[in-house]
Image 1 (spheres, rainbow, N blue to C red):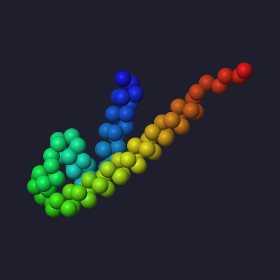
Image 2: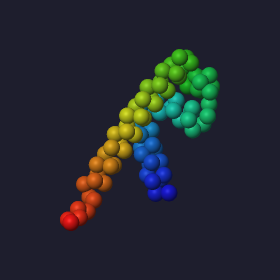
Image 3: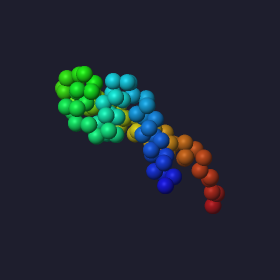
Length: 85
């Protein structure tokens, strides 16, 4: 449960850090479940722009989440107790 909540916070933070034009299409697609055509109508942009922005937003999210996960593990490693044997 704690891990799921931590992952959820990482995703939320990564989405919030996206530029508005990318955040808008990600939220409309992934959270609201709109089709590309519906997003184009709501955002008043061509469907090709929807597709491009989603691809770029997903790439940015993937990079940010990978970096956030790596930083989290690095942080945890810094504070693990060292056992002398």
